[in-house]
Amino acid sequence: MTADSALTYLRRSADKAVILGGDRADMALAALETSTAVLILTGGLYPDVKVIARAQEKNVPLILVHYDTYTTVEKINHLTRRLKPGNTTAIQVALENVEKYCQWQTIVEAMR
Image (cartoon, rainbow, N blue to C red; front, side, top):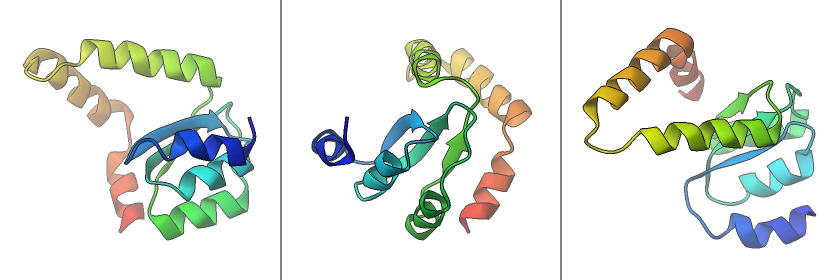
């Protein structure tokens, strides 16, 4: 898919997470021109400098993962099927995992 044709889909949702290969600078830049809350870049590939600069300008966090795009989407789907509003046990486990495995303080500081 080209970046131009992707814009049709990217404009459909506000404050979305966009998951794409870390080597797709064209798609990442297109996503950053729409209402995007986070870019999740897959394949363990470091993004282009232009993507990093534009994400900083827009205050959009970049998350780099080593999984391929399909596996990343599947893992997120698996998680969201388990987390439901009102399920305090599942939410507590998720919060504990974020605290244990995510350097969220660093992310928050970087966003300031």
